[in-house]
Image (tube, rainbow, N blue to C red; front, side, top):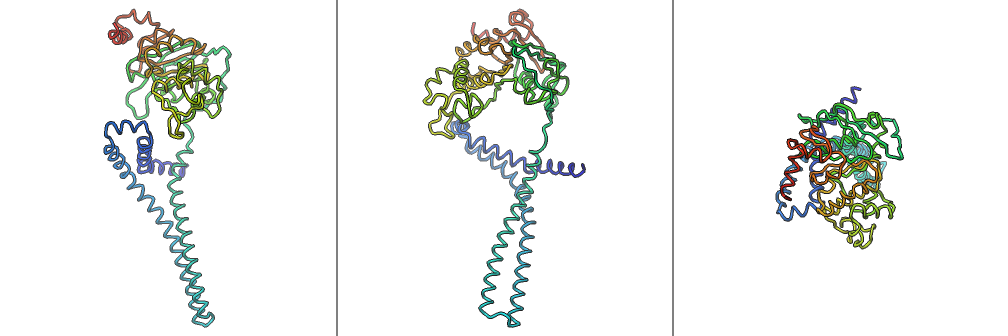
Length: 416
């Protein structure tokens, strides 16, 4: 136990001291230098000098201490190898010299032995150098392997998720509060919320009011700081983690598409059902764009790996992300700002077909465009981490002193 604590303390010290800044610098370089999308902003705003200065300042400060640590470790191992090599050479030279003095070796043999010793010494020194570098690298990599081997702090549970053909699930938040690590304020405070299978629940509110945090708790990306979340009366921590994750199809604000063929992006896998993928893209409003793609579902996105890759717009990417959620065909469809990058016509088409898109699933989504809430059965209004109003659109809009009425009119006045 003491040894484990000591190693953990060493890991934290090294990660905080020099490895973590180096890692941050590496991620910074990867994000800006290897991402062609970031290149647009760098070019148009002439950010080359700014990016270079910021990167090298971060990298050099990290590299200074990192290289010192690495050099010290390498020096320890290399010094031992050099000492051993020189001691061996000295011993062999002394042996040859003694034999030569005693007349046991001829002059030709002395030259031959000396040449052999020189070549052996060079090879042994090279071996010792490589071994020293291996040990030095191993000492540095041990920290990363120890970090990667740390077990997840999220409870994985053992209870199987009961499969319901009718998707009959009930989710309940019971006095749920959540505080991000290191934060002073709570992101969510005493949330009590129940919704049934088949409902359309919209969550609205100002930025930073806790809507996305609630989605992350529902999907078990985090566990509540206080309170509990239940699925069909059982705490979600008790369910098998992978089985629980499988009941959610989610589109987050920061979703990611990959430079793979379109069909693989929709299926989130190397193999895909072409008919199903095409159907999901059509339901997400992508069929017209798909018809114009040269290789159909096999058309690669972006040009990172394929010269004939197709670049897509932000709105098109959002449609593909929605299609991916539909392809998974999970009981819960969770959409975080699903139409933020779509044009008004496409947005209207998606929301008017929300029942068709969800097809009997429970739909939970966040939106800042309150016009979309009219298609929902239930609306929860968030403010400063709390639910301050809940009800249908007509009910909430009738309360002229409520936050929903204020948000609605703040948008509606520009369309009057």
